Length: 414
Ligand SMILES: Nc1nc2c(c(=O)[nH]1)N[C@H]1C(S)=C(S)[C@@H](COP(=O)(O)O)O[C@H]1N2
Ligand SMILES: [Mo]
Image (cartoon, rainbow, N blue to C red; front, side, top):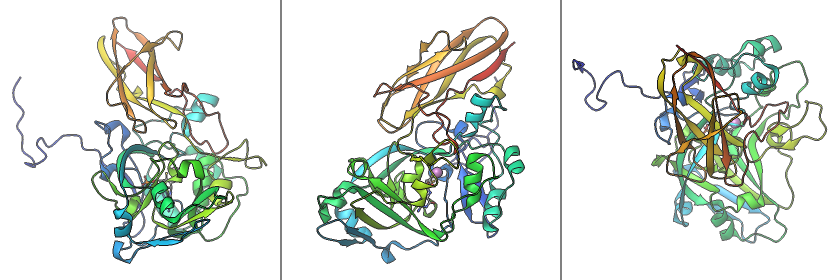
């Protein structure tokens, strides 16, 4: 084979290499206010920081210098405390590698599996700029507009987070016996973008609760707050957090969907009850319909397994050996098994699980498929986690949160 001429950046090496880039949405000032990770372009386990998805529910806050920042801790504690970043950093630290997955990631696949609507693509993601601009203008989409949009993929990434366990911080203040939950508040403020909720449901023809101007907040149940892997983190992937990911300090709540990972923390309050935060009472809930009186807050994610290679878009494929490859993770801990089926789920074969098997991180898996007969094939994969849960775990719910169904790849072999 002739050698290819290489003219490019010395550091990067060959110029046409694939570098994952954020699919970003910018507001009219050119500021990135949302973004999707190019999931199918990732190699390895950690999403490069610049390609990490970005989600926010309220107005983006102005950045704050760590020297001008403090975190207050009060409520049901013996000694209310105010921490500077330096003081937080004096506590015994911890690093956790974990998947951050937006609760609405892959929501469109619910409709594909339940109603047979068109299968969303993992490659062709929607124009995020349009959303960013609509957000600035407080514009609400119509049900028709939402129906014609492609859906949410790539609202998931994996990173390494360094900080201090929330439990250590709480220990310093001393929990009072009546403690039930830990309310975490961000310094971002605004009116919830109702378009986000309409998009999540997939229609805009119903009334939403409008809480007015609020700070982003979540009330974490005490048991999860005390889990040693629940962190207050100031670093991600070996450097201080970027502003868009919640600097100076954000919460990291492994296994629970992104909305629990409060960014831009400014206040922590221990409560003797569960608070009625908008983002756990009205949004980020399970229910049958917007009118359902028994909505429940969402917490841990289900069991996830996605096929990254091949995709439908790679079809047709030649006869021969193909490596079927993907990622698997779970909201309850490590993955113990991934199985692949090539006959519509009648028989399942164990896939190879690539080390390391980290509790909160996704795992790469693969299966070598030898195919000699032309035809249409359906490739399916499903995962099992260390608690014995097999996907799917999460039933359809009207906000289409925590999708964890089995999405096949359909290919033709020539
Ligand atoms: N303060 C604050 N924290 C927040 C949010 C927000 O709007 N404000 N959005 C949440 C949601 S819905 C998600 S999915 C994650 C996304 O984190 P990332 O942007 O770092 O990927 O942040 C969460 N933390
Ligand atoms: Mo989210």
